Length: 138
Image (tube, rainbow, N blue to C red; front, side, top):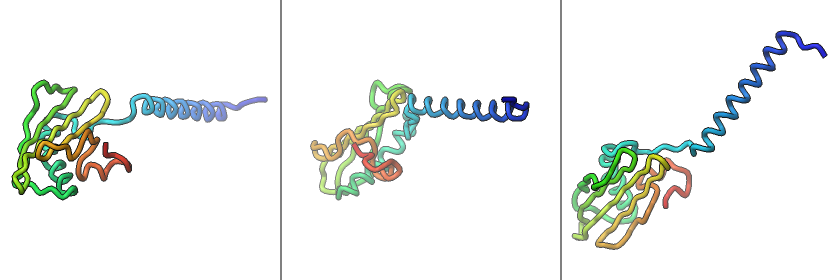
């Protein structure tokens, strides 16, 4: 069977495209294709009071004032750690912990109201959960 130059170029190009697609799929499968929603400590610190307040509102908890957040000791560019505090309208203490690991692209959130867990190790809070697949909450 004789293959013309034009057919050889077309087949070679198609083979390269298939290899490139296979490589891309393999990369995404191995890397998980995930990134942290909040890629920096500052971004997490800014977003956490809003997302935590929305999560508490969805659960019927009303805050007396906006949450105040600060960096937790030991945070790094690879391991994000933020803590927020506040009070409910019925004077219960609210504590929120948020963390993110860049290497694994995993986030975890815990909310305590009056010392009791309302949210434990959730992977998202508030409106952030609507942008994830079903079952995004931990």
